[in-house]
Length: 166
Image (cartoon, rainbow, N blue to C red):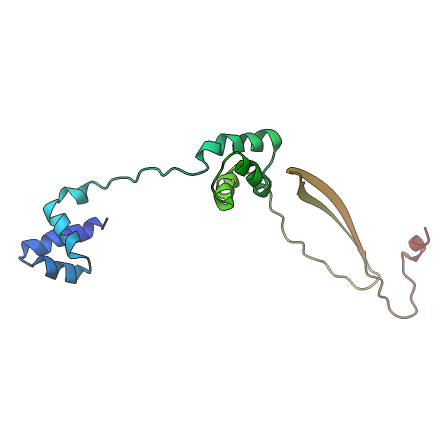
């Protein structure tokens, strides 16, 4: 389907007496297209919506939603063999496109900006939360990161040296 502006231009050039071939050459479209819009001007006024296409996943969407809601399974690689056993003939990418909007939103993390100090001047602590998925179930792990720069000028003792023996 071409734009209404082009259809209007077809009718305008036809009124000026140009031939179908001249109109087609000037607008860069096929002669049959020009002929169609001259014979049926109502086609340009009423664009028809495309019919909804069926997906190979349609018969299995409720089952996938059930796995997501009840089993908390968001792993498409794990779902695909189950669906194939049920008669699914589609691809993994179709399944991923369907599951993606159903996944829970994950919070973003801001990048960590390191604050550097002189040697033996400061200890840095950082606390982190890490999320991973195992067997379709999300798990959280918390970790503590401690950094103490032990590079010191020659002959000086670390202010935390007594902690190393504890």
